[in-house]
Amino acid sequence: MGGWSGGLNAFYRKKIVTASSQIAARTCGVEYDLVATTHRKAPVAFARQLAMYLCHVVADMSLRDVAEEFGRDRTTVSHACHAIEDRRECPIFDRQIEHLENALADRIREFVAGDRKSRPQLEKKGMRLFA
Image 1 (tube, helix red, strand yellow):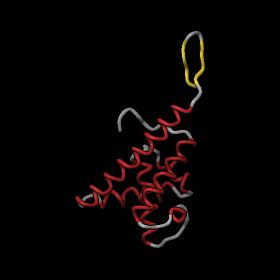
Image 2 (cartoon, helix red, strand yellow):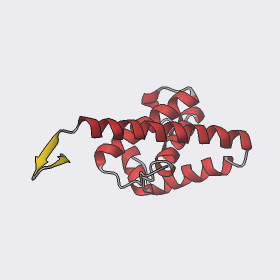
Image 3 (cartoon, rainbow, N blue to C red):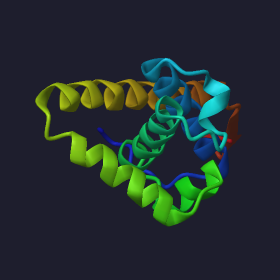
Image 4 (cartoon, rainbow, N blue to C red):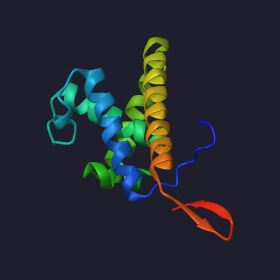
């Protein structure tokens, strides 16, 4: 994913979880608000698994961090990631997941780049620094 390598603070984790949940909800045809709930209906549960998988794989979030953000146990996130990985043996499903991974990576790059542009610049001994 280029030069970006995880190391997320809580601010970025929240933004990534929101973005992955929006992508998963739209893809699975469920309401975004349901992804964060405990609904167990198949489309909602799958969307939640997909969102957790995207956070872990694309954003390089630890299982513990993903679990914390989704209000789940680390083993639940591990199960979700394995469930998605197991289905990737199907070439069509694999291409769909790859497309979603790229979509989340693009969203992450957008808000990281946007944050860089909006930070005020400071002058220090003739050098420009970002705050």
